[in-house]
Image (spheres, rainbow, N blue to C red):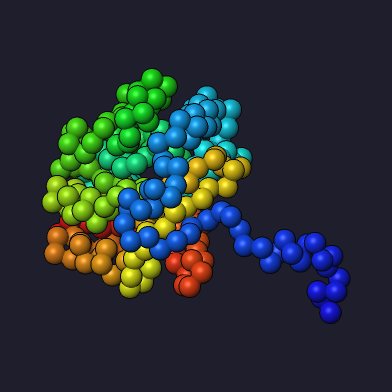
Length: 262
């Protein structure tokens, strides 16, 4: 009965699978890379830069993935973790924001961190670092090329917000981070499968920017095993988007975690 009320052309559109989202089940990162444009597109950098300049100048309130919003969407667990870490260190907070773009999380949370003795280091690709230094760096916000360039690792928070899926070997990265011994590790907006992993290609909607790139869905059990010996999990939480992601043959999900060194 309901179908009779919908024009046939609309029914065809509804049946047609979306061209955007996560596709494939690739054996290697390189195979997925060969089937995508990649993440180092200058168009991505330019759009992110233009959006965040508006946030920096007070012309917009909040940016995520280059998209501007009229109000800030806080990840309250992440902000609580940052403030809690600062309270444990005499109101001093050094954040190592891995894959932090041009400062999305910094600008998102800065109003709640004004009273904190804050240093925020973003580890990014070379082109993002150059752009960040030119347009956004200040006494609190710095841009660096790798983790080794960051000072105060023994008093800092390692933050990865939606960045682990987009590097070739996220498990190896986290093994290295755990060896460094950051007092606190915060993981946010990271997609998981419960007991397996998958490498896909993510096709981004053109309304955000024209791009496609490899993207991991991490094995949650395997990921958490990395932390067991050296870290205590303080909490796990849903992300602000509360995403369930349809991969065709199964559903994936986004989660976040806060860890404290033992």
